[in-house]
Image 1: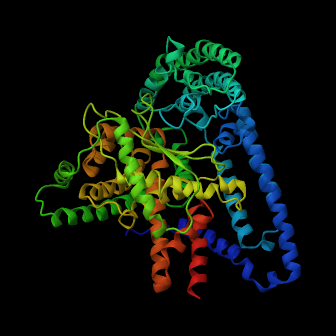
Image 2: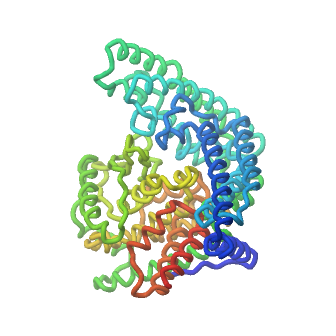
Image 3: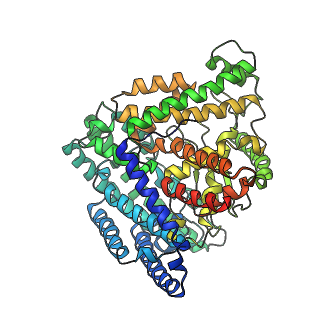
Length: 609
């Protein structure tokens, strides 16, 4: 197991943060605070704190209406929120600043453990978001993933977060269509400002984005993804409503949606693409090094430097490859790891040739894993999830992924599988490690449990720290043997390659954005190290180029969770209960890694006595 390595300054920050959290978490055991007067004061401060949390979250939902929709709050379903506008950014800044001001009036020394943790997480989140607003992400509105033009068709097709159950739902979405036009105009204006300031996307990012924009430009409205809700209108709608909605949606596609995508495409192709840069790293942007440092801290919730993360990646690559070599030798295979991987794949059961069969392959994994979950967990989520293939218009640029369920069960979670090229180039295996990561006990399991935890304040109930969320999902992949999977050699070797892939990300992301690597060098390193083909490797490299820092969170989060488990096993010995460990780890939802570590250290101490 590779260990974290910190420079002196970063280590001091880390120790201060963890020491502070220990102090906060230890409040409930202080004799002074156990007196009746202290209890009364703690309740008063707790009430004040909850009011601040609720006021903040209500304002946040109004500012980010699509987020509200994603968690099942339907009040703002007719609004999009032009989050890239200067006006909106000013409102965000005001919300975060005013909330910090209110927080300063809470006597944190009077808080009990649960509220102390909430206080620490809330303050951290606000300061982090304020820092994020000092950078100019709004000037880079177009990219091939995690951007509105790419996600809006999913919403509009009735396959995502936008509800299409009532006539009002249908009318609501038309409000978002109108807002999308405003967003597009704002995006174009922002991108032009970016050109003037030298803040532009790498050329490959726009080349990946253009086909997605062009896919929405259709001559026949009925061929548009945005017409899908009309084809799937509930039978309970009156004939008059069906007729009216068909007309207005046809008009919206012809007069608003298609022209807006055409405008974006023409701008991106004719005006923006010639101004894009041949370089790919954040370091090549004005202030790019500071910007990337922020993204690293934001995504990993640590004070690891990019250079330390790079070395951590190299160490992990060596460790995982050593395990791969052990398996190769165990099988008596004489060739290289790449040749061994092909050998195992050839011996594996045949894959699937159609999207429908691939989904059924994943359903078989679901059945096997769910039966074993009680071995490792006491609490299981109530939310259901569906397994679907990614829509064809975005499958060339989007990896397999998970979309969260609503807490009230009105919308299930969705495990999206990338099936690009299935039946044309080769048969496709259903990956057990991918299922564990995206579905259970990975994303669906963890996020659903968090959202079902009503005792958490809403800013935490619906929080998402990438290092925790993705770190848990990667850790979940390691639980396969205990969940009855990886019995077939190719599946286990693929799981190791999956982990290796995440280790390589530490090297490649830092290489691209701090060390001056070009796309070709990063692509070559990834292909040679992970045994992935060029198309898969290119998709990933272009993702890291478009979304700096995000790929770092997986391995760093997994290493921290694994280290916490190892510490608990060593400290507790025969007292260690894996189900209790997992339940405590997950019960408070996603947290920054240092706050998570402090919380778990307190739990380990309590179990040891």
